[in-house]
Amino acid sequence: MNDVYAAPKSDVTLTGQPDNNSGMKQNTLPDGIAGFSWGAFSLNWIWGGFNKTYIGFLALVPYIGFIVAIYLGFKGRELAWKNKKWDSVEHFNRVQKKWSIWGLCLLLIPLIGIIAAIAIPAYQDYVLRAGGI
Image (cartoon, rainbow, N blue to C red; front, side, top):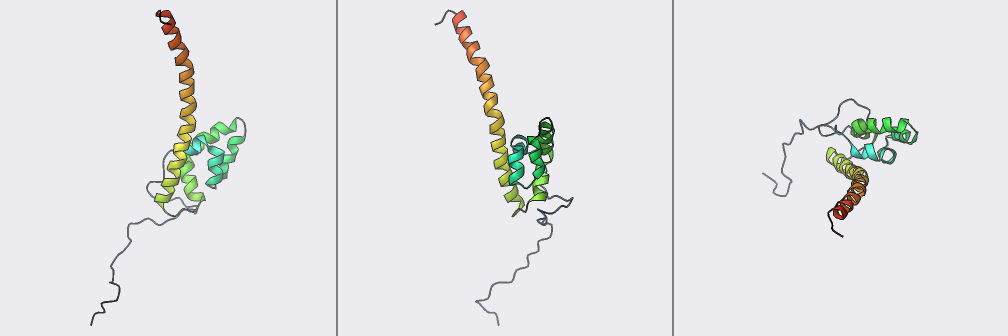
């Protein structure tokens, strides 16, 4: 006789799901981990401290810092996955996306300022030569 109050039996198998191997020094990475990290490139030593990737502190050394920033840009996501324990790939991607947004803002805001510093005086000069003000 079936017990109507018992939980139904499930036949769910998790084959094909990658194991969460974050925080382990393994060569295999789940899909969605590799890619360029703007957060690691721009905020290298801060990003390195929060993601337990302490090579980022080498960015504070003159002349070596630029090379470290480029290295972290290309390998940062992989290093962060291997050095820190994450709840899931989705959690990892959420956190790294926030770092990338902040890293891009750090690069784009000064770039907009430089363009404005060139464009505003050029526009004012154009208006004066055109017989405006």
